[in-house]
Length: 228
Length: 261
Image 1 (cartoon, rainbow over the protein chains, first blue to last red):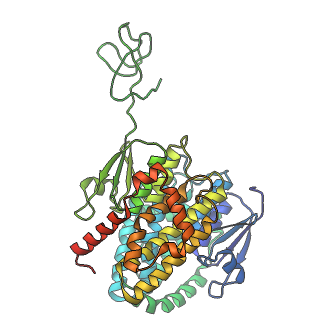
Image 2 (spheres, rainbow over the protein chains, first blue to last red):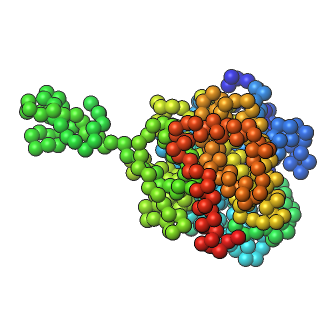
């Protein structure tokens, strides 16, 4: 079953797509990448993911799997060499917990901070920093979240090493202060030095142009967004 | 030897005693023929911090019941104020359920259910074996949290156009879940499993949603109601799910306390 054909539908700048690509490449799984313009979604994407209509979408031997964390677990269970998740049930639960936490508290608030202004931006920046502090605490002393080698949580949080600094710089938010977050800073460098990761990142200049345009487009929606 | 045997200490003649007692030292043969021993290890301690109407807490209770795991249930009064234990065991989110297994906490309901499945893997299996079926179960459980919970919450806490929009989203979500169920007795197929556990707690809240939203779930999703009633025949579900009217009364009580609606 593991030897069947793998296709991945993605969008070049999506951090969710990249975490799936990193997992596949770290495991040495061959796949065909299909680029989809999420602003002009293909009939194929809408057919394969009618519920959420989003990338990434993985197709393995005709089976369709969507939602990046669900895909990561599927990859882990299908290609057992080079496990990304720890063996111990408690360590696995912790990896899943922090992945969910970072998605809901860090990624969500960083996105709002990027696209909003004034007091809304200030609040989002503060929430982002609070979340970073918790992640710094979780990382302390380790080269990677997984210990000595890249694992599930590094892949899940990998966007912090590359997307967050871009947003930080664009928006002058001063989120990733190396004095405040020494462990995250060291981890960031370790992560980006990995050959699989280094060779699978979107071009930075193109990213800045994309997010500058996108943050302007999203700003009015952010302004009218209700506070949680 | 490693036999789990509570806090009681016995020494066996001729055996290596790994616990201290007044007669011998750990690792030495016991000289006494009148003693009987086993290695003393801590009994498994499982505690669940929970709140009775929480559908997320119910998931943890169901998983423990299906696995036949003995545990201590500790009620958190989330309306009155969170306990020191909760704040210590889940300092990041400060939410229930928190499963404390031999003193170590695990939180987030779906993560707790998966942990229970993996830590007691020799017992009744909650997630299917096949990776693709597991992915489907995880996908729909995530869908329930993102779409069903959110829109359900809106149905019971908003009015007017906002409530109407929430009702549409809620029913559309339920119809998609009914499609996933198909003609199977359970979401897990022949066996009650992870996705059934993820969703059945919401059945306890259906009366509340229907009353606040003035609509009938059975009218649009008869197969889902049939599935829910089938689940209610399981002892674990019958013992775990509070009666629907009790949840409704609880919501009315909270709304009154906080001056809502």
